[in-house]
Length: 92
Image (cartoon, rainbow, N blue to C red; front, side, top):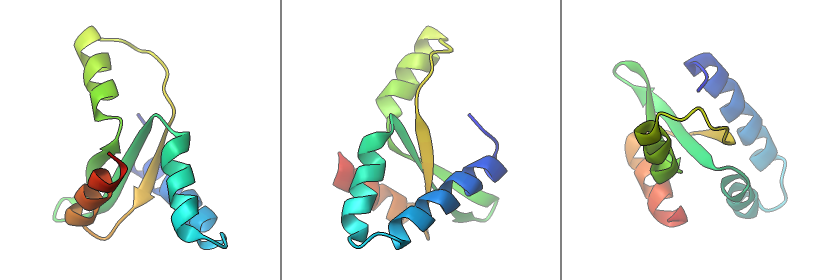
């Protein structure tokens, strides 16, 4: 996984894609569908918080197997952890 600066860059690209879309909700759905793992990043007391919006079970399996398997991933900038949890529930 990349460092937080790289996750911020990914989130900025996603934001640009969504904002340039005629249908932002569809664009968000397309982003989530296109990746194995989607991380929600948000401001926190520690600087930046991280929540797995999609792909948690994949990451758990890879960790259990101690695998270096490749998977696609992106990040979405959110306002809070609560918003990340809500998005996770919507895409489940």
